[in-house]
Length: 293
Ligand SMILES: [Fe+2]
Image (cartoon, rainbow, N blue to C red; front, side):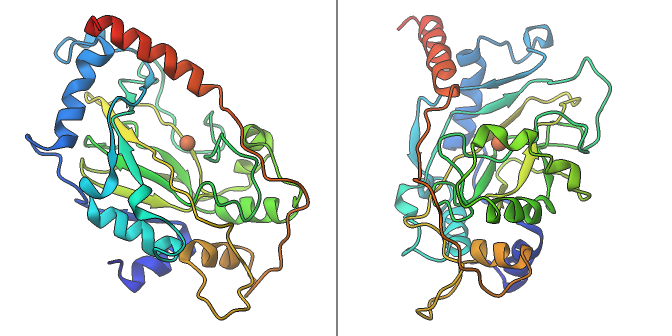
């Protein structure tokens, strides 16, 4: 599905932008999900005074197989992860749990992407991170609304992949997902991108990509989801059985400037229950109250 140039670009820069990967037109599931947000969040689409100056991380009330919305994106995810033996495409699910940015920072001066922007992080708040962690195979941005410049497009730092790779290579004991912001990694980065897009686009990024929310100074609300997908097994950076490295693994080897790496964890893998789940359960209760159910 992906052209060789796209795969090479992913290995070097850590992301692939798929344009028009799914239908957002009236009558589509995606369109209905977006229309539902106004009532779900108690906001009047046509009255800006009801729009919050911030984001809402909405809970999911509908979850469906991603292949029902975008078979193309699922195929691209499989390719980047090394094929169906390494990732179960049937288990990739997308939902209406939007990160809705109604105007975060619209009361403040625009901030261009740089280390001084707050909130840079690596995704995966539900597990202890190792260089080869299987839990977060890709960072994905599924775009449900047009995102113009200064319209809340996620900030990404493509050269962060190298710094995260070096950091985790040197920590075989693992690292807490909540401590990446304080690890001084974003300060080492020099390349930043504001991820603008159209409704129906999908941006697939390396799981090490540091990223941050940006201010939405546009007239539009921004709706995206960041669904996680996982490898079946930990990544492998020294395949002695002749099997191919996935593009995700090749990006790590490229970032570390090595052809292979013998990496072994020195503590147990751990699952973590993230605080966001409690917050989303509270939001779901509020939605039910509004709907009278
Ligand atoms: Fe994130």
